[in-house]
Length: 295
Image (cartoon, rainbow, N blue to C red; front, side, top):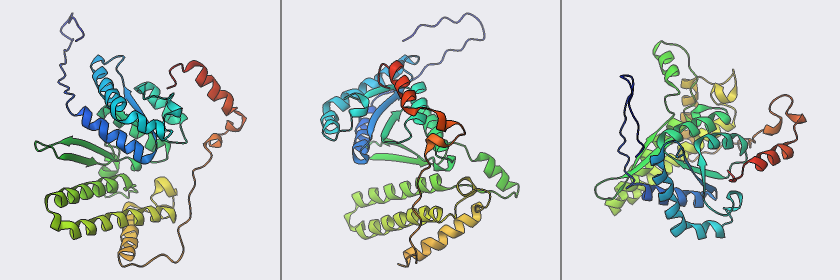
C-alpha cells in the first residue's frame, strides 16, 4: 500500500477494494477468445502509477503461462509480441491502436481502460456506433453472468435531440450487438437448465444471426446512417425500418436478387494529404528503435 500524507483540508484519501478472485476466470475467457479469433493477446494496465494493478497483470500472466502459452506458440500468434505475453501501459496501448491498422490483436484491461480503448478504436473506424461492451462475472452457483451494453454515453446528445423532436441519425450497430449477445446468453442459460428447450434455443440463435446479417447487409448496400453513408444517409427511424424490412425477407427465406457489394477499408497510408510523402517503413523502424519492450 502506498503511503500518502494529507497536508491540508483539500486532500482526499480514496480506498479501493479490488478483489482479484474473478481475474482467473476472465483470463481463461480472454485467452480462449483470442485463440478462436486467431489474434495476439496483450494485457493493458497503468500499473506504473496504480500499483494495485500489478496483481491483475500477474494473474493474467500466470494463467497464460500454465494453460495457453503452448497453444499460442503452436498457432504462431506470438511472433509479433516477441514470443511471449506482453504487457502494455495504457498510454502505449492507445498509440498502438493507431499504429496497428491491420488488426490481429486482443487487449484485456480494467473497465475504464477498456472504455477508453473501445471508444478510440471505434472512432478510428469512423463511428462510435460500433462500440459494444460485455462485462462478465459469476453468480453464487458458478454460472457465468454477462452484462451487455452499447456505447459508453456517446449517444446522449442524440437522445436529447430526439426528445426535442429533432431529426437524428444514430448508428445502432453496437446497441443491437449488445441485445443480440444478451438474447444468446439468456437462451444458453435456459438450455443448460432444461435440455428440452433445444428448439427454442435454435429459434433464438437463428433470429439473432439473421438480424445481424440483415443489419450488416443494409450497411453494405449503402443504406446506412449518416456516420457511414454521409449526408444522404438514413435517419435513425428510416434505418430501423429498412433493417426490419430486410429482416422480414430473410426470416421468410427470401434472398436478395444481388449480393451486397464487398466493402474494403481504404489504404490508411494515404487518408490525409501529404501522407504519400511519408516513408512508412522508416517511420516503423523509428518506432522499433525506441520501443525496447516491443510494445
